[in-house]
Length: 58
Image (tube, rainbow, N blue to C red; front, side):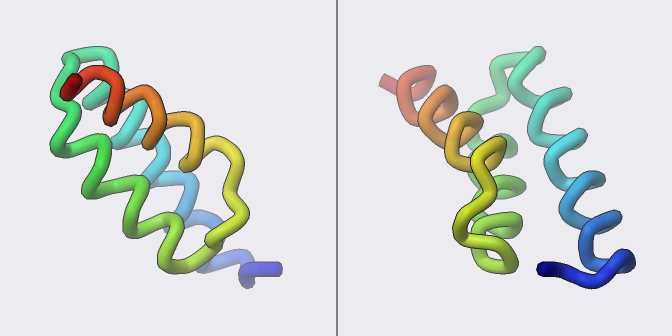
């Protein structure tokens, strides 16, 4: 379980990934979620966003 400080960082990265997904900026989404997954490899939101970005890149 990540500390409160790290969890805030994860949340900020996921927020950035969501904003990038809204703009269809898939490379930024991938960059953000890969960072999240390097911290928390079981993060379901990051996995879902990564799947979306990979599909978006085709």
